[in-house]
Length: 358
Image (cartoon, rainbow, N blue to C red):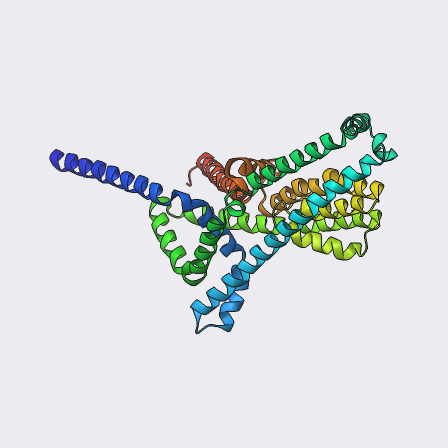
């Protein structure tokens, strides 16, 4: 009897080592595709209702339906990225040259309402005055700021925006998730249920609810940023401020895309000689429009998932710092599962305190 138990233990230990080695080897092979696959799962989950409508019209051709939906997604990702890249390439250089030319004509002073800002107004004017003494130094400094800003954007966007090949892998994965995702999910659930049992349902519900909340938070944030930016456009006298606000909301659906919208319009105002409006719109964008993202998104997610606002905000910002752009989703999802485990333990503790039935 003892020999049988020992043999069983040895077999389990050997099996555990083999399985661990297999998992390590699998990670070595697949680690570079983890981020694209994570994005593919998030995109497929968020767009699944739209795909179901496409599939319903092409019910006899599931592969064609998946391909059509993937092509639509590709256009939605690629076209705005190309537009923003072309806009930056043409406008940034022109804007720097225009500002430098204006400074050559005389001293550049910030508008009165900016100079009168408490704590920072005098410092901003002093910094601008220092830079405008030497136009060429200003040109070099502006170029350096643009380079640093571009590097920051690339760092935030991470693997998806920086590497077109990984974006391509994500879209290819999305195609197969559309076509075979339901079968794959059923297999994953069946395997995980062997380890987690009935607890798996609560964890999957937490993951799905949080992912939906993040998507709705992204939409609500885009609408809020478009509305607030539209108010700034109206104040600055931009033609068709409602239309420009709507366009800003669409661009805001791309994470970190909003500054390109109001920033481009502010640069256009500066180039047109409307200094007060241009600088005012820049200040409005930095101090108001950009902060909508940090407040509205966690608030929407918190209300939708019954997770404290502060924890959601930490999840969004910490996820960005830990995982890059995909951390916008992974950070809150990890905390959602943690909260599900926490609540489950609390329920078990409360049940343990109940008196036994008579």
